[in-house]
Image 1: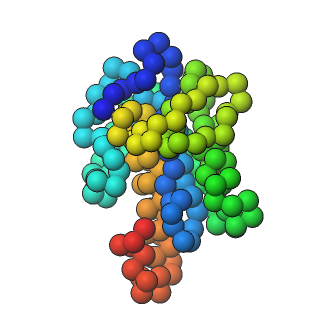
Image 2: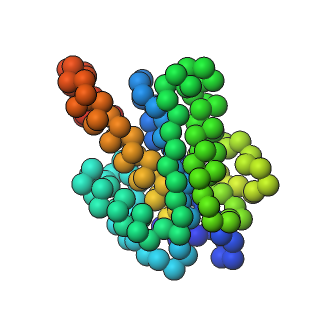
Image 3: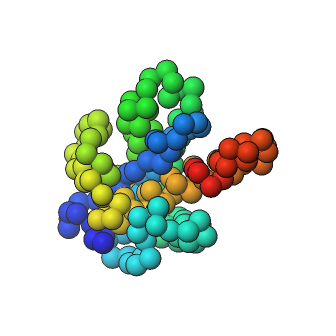
Length: 166
């Protein structure tokens, strides 16, 4: 995995979690990762255990230059559709980045242009660039935490095995 795409530009990576869920919000994160910081155990979040994601989340929050996690609830998704919600939540995560940046690295093959910034889309970007890989770990952690809390508040959800199918 590469720490960056551009050698001289400040990059923010973004990705989302929860898009394929039948219920609940969609989460996205944006991360600016230091070009000189290695975090070798970061990889596709789906290949990591929850315990490993938690450990990495703490390291990402400690070492990232800047990061933000955002979400859009299911009511908003139903109003605007999942595709528009996906773009909106990534933009909201990027809006939360307070550090000036030059370009956006996006996991996927489509992105709605962000005002006054360039972007590049990468299918499988979470396995190519550290900022995207870190972003999905943060987004997935928050999405899983949300589902965990719902299952605690509403134990009947466990009848549908939500904790194992999020």
